[in-house]
Length: 136
Image 1 (cartoon, rainbow, N blue to C red):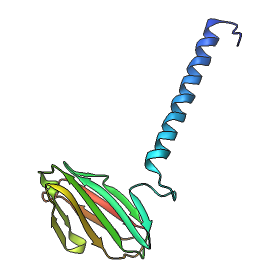
Image 2 (cartoon, one colour; image 1 turned 120 degrees about the vertical axis):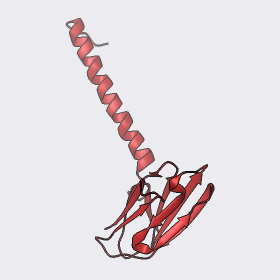
Image 3 (spheres, helix red, strand yellow; image 1 turned 90 degrees about the horizontal axis):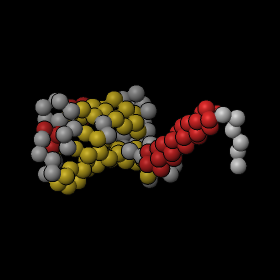
Image 4 (tube, one colour; image 1 turned 180 degrees about the horizontal axis):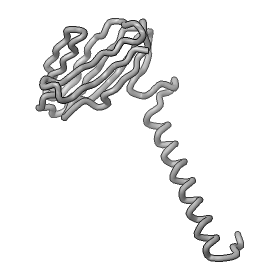
């Protein structure tokens, strides 16, 4: 049992404990959900010498930024679930790709290997929503 000289000291100690606990909680949540087993960000992964990225298309693209390793081909998986807006059509001008996505389902787009420093941008049919793939 701790002895406190005053009620203010107790309040300050409790407040600091609460802040430390909250910060630790969010750090653990971040590590569990956003960092993969190999230390990469969860939305970009390398398996068998291929970059894999995945996003959801509905009222935009989520996530909308990826970083992939240069010199490896990339598989972009787009998941739709009741998507009936302009993000149901994906345009990647740099690669001359335009895909109509299903209302609900998964679509894979193959991106050939790129050199470091390349930026690939994709858009919805109206150009309102954008996603970016940076090659590093």
